[in-house]
Length: 113
Image (cartoon, rainbow, N blue to C red; front, side, top):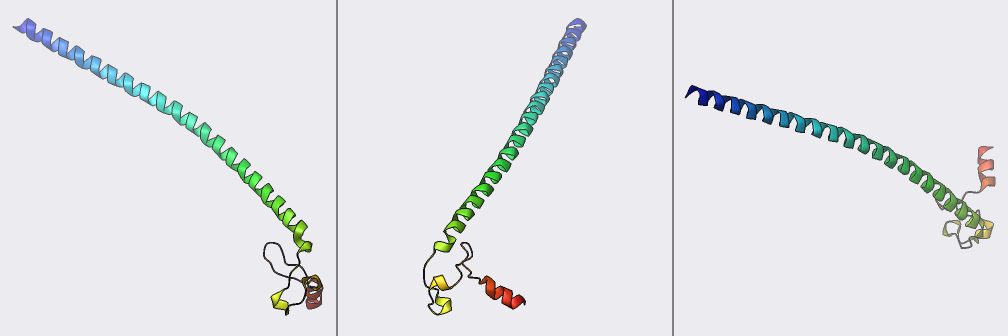
């Protein structure tokens, strides 16, 4: 009876050691894969940040081009300004293309003087 008990204990001990070794190996593999994917995600985050900067630069250039285009059409606007009692626009300063505010430069110079 003692040899059977000893053999059962040895077999159980071996099974437990094998199970612990497999679990340890599995945990090590999971850690390696996690580190690898973390590094890959970091590289992808850097690429995304670079592309966002590029996109922001393109959007900025596009906005400046649109503003230049609007300024090119700026003096050609013709209408009647209701704030100046219906005077023709060609006698008034043209409105700014974005804000729509009319500013007479000569009037500003006189106000500063």
